[in-house]
Image (tube, rainbow, N blue to C red; front, side, top):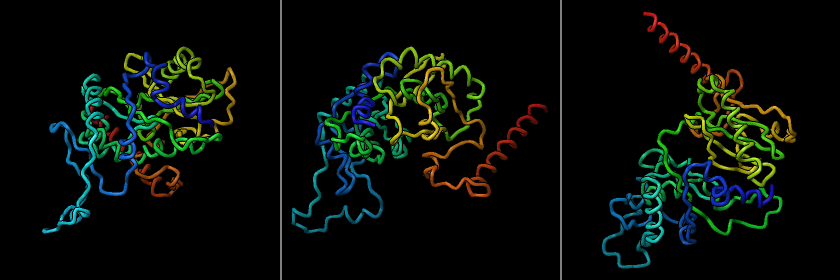
Length: 338
């Protein structure tokens, strides 16, 4: 993998070319002081002071163990012991507020490559739906995933010459509340040929995917030939798509081949064996039963660290879940027959 291949997967690079077949997105270059704020872990987590009181969240994110740190002893006159003033980015806040309004009032944020999915829990909405500058900063500043973009994007490049990209961008994507996670797919391209397709949300079994598997595969393959293969310059890469209710395909993201990108229901060893030869039969892999679900962020445990062998705790968990689902199905059938 080379630096140029990683750079092509930055949203501010690929989006202009695929704007007509993607979801509405606006990007904004971030000032360096804000990047340093995101990287700063030397003190308490302070949110920037908002110029709009109605958008402001509590300035400091802390827990009960921090309470003593917040107190200033009475009579203390040593200014060196006074806490630093909270950060403030009024110009950036105004620009972001304008973009949010342009996109309908709610957005999904991400940086050059990554979205802060690991910090969605801390958002007031419990998701990555953001309606203000303060909410965006909260999920971005709380995310460990974005450290990849800020510090490690080129770590696995064979021609590494950069420690970080010269510029960082905030991409705000229009929020669509009706998006269905089962209709997201990751596509694997090898030698400019589509060699595999995987269900993106592998932690859940969706019966509808079994019913529509052939239709979905045909839609994705046709979209690749018409809209992706000759427009994206890399030979090896992955990209994510979403299929709407009226069977339109939309590009969500591009990622480098291998490296930090998840192979999902494939393994990279399997995908590497395919040289992207024309005529290759493309396989769409989906979770075909409740027992076949994969743990993900919902388990808070990486899949590689789980013991899934027969008799293991995870095997027993899946077995119990399968039995419960069968029981629910039988009960529903019995109620319908009454």
